[in-house]
Length: 275
Image (cartoon, rainbow, N blue to C red; front, side, top):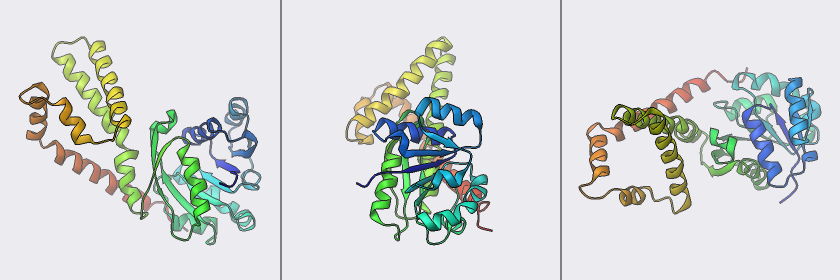
């Protein structure tokens, strides 16, 4: 694979996670430049990671073959429009992790000949255990897609999707998904407390169960129905709980929740169109 020269625009949580992940995988710090307006953030980047940070985004992207857009969705247009002339010269691949901002708008702001890829990571990327949905239009060449996958793979798994619309579902499932699991763990702890456990004990049991279950699911073949069945003895306590979930239409509740999140993602995307 060809070498990676990376510019990261925005040093928030995801930008920092990607920088840290790439450095852990062997990318040299001199190959990463960050565009960041905050002096405090720039100093922290240089101190903690040894990368170069600048207020000048044009300087940041000048030598890059991959430019990561890691700013808030409402700031993407203002960040990208001034860079279009530099992009026309250097022709990097632009990777956006800004939720909801469509490729049509990104290309309009970057210049229509610039290859653009979108990725939707999730919050576990902050600890190197994320999963990202990635969409690359057909006209982006394979070497550029490979570079972008290397960047996103530094913080977890990467799953390619066939359409940009699929990213709305990715956002609703894995992007928002950590909140769903946190809510379930919170509710389990509350139920344990109401049934007589001290609150700290119930909390500790719930958090440890969440962590261990994730490891168990990830360590094998990921066959979730089989893993669930292995915990469920016929006529036992787990079966009783699962029957209660079924009676409450848990499957329908989850489907409606994910559908609501996907629909809201499509609504929000309408705010970020080219002008």
